[in-house]
Length: 326
Image (cartoon, rainbow, N blue to C red; front, side, top):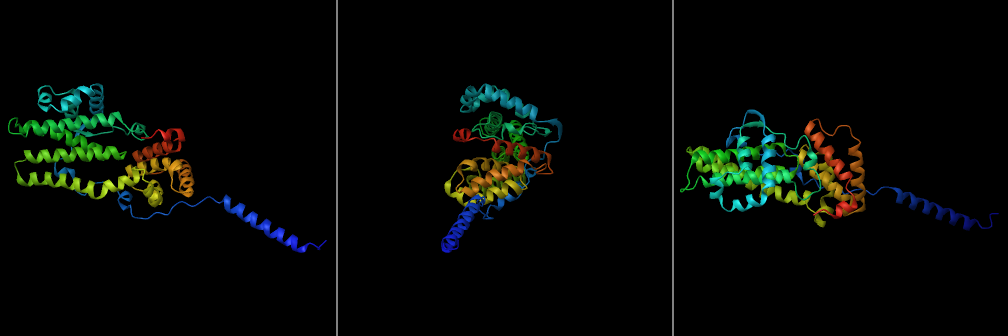
């Protein structure tokens, strides 16, 4: 019975090899390790320079979201007419649109919960967000009106401050809520533009310089740090997907900044279909499942709600939906 001993040994070796290969194939591939270079996304997105140096924060009792929703709705309902008016700012001054009036009406409101009650409005894979887009357009028109009233022909410091203050406070509210990157960036842009306008209305040279310094600080921050980071987190570049995938996993799980966590989680949803490696593709699915099973992802209620919303959006993204993303 041992006459074919060599054959039995070879068979055993082959069986062991096949078993090992089968076991190896069953081990989930490892995701890419983080580079540790995306440090900006691993810290709060608060500005180093206080907006209060330009304009003290509003302290009214009302929630600005009510008026802001009216402003966005009015803008979207009359978008074509308002876009045409944007090129004729003197006509806007003659008959101020309701959208701008609502932005001004909310200027003194001390709080804003615009998307907090329903973060799904902005946490999704849609290319447009009508509420945010319409509101930003109304705020930008308010800034344009303010700028008009700083010119020699229409000079009126009271009106210039009225509209610039309203746009600045809208920007501050968006910057503070910052559920998604677009909301944060819209807030920075509105504040930066308004600050440069308010510089023209300040009689005190120190106050004027504070406004200018604030606007320049925002512009430098965007160009030097934020733009490249957003290319990596929000973009679809193959090189970035391969290089920084591990950082995206880390940001999604651990970043103290709500906005960056949300955006990184949404990218994990895309990783299910476009990750550069098999390990990152499987890792995205595993990470989303693990995070969905967690009872708490943050002690902050808004971050908890926003991150949970992002997890659901990413987990539920189908291949067909992914192919429709623009």
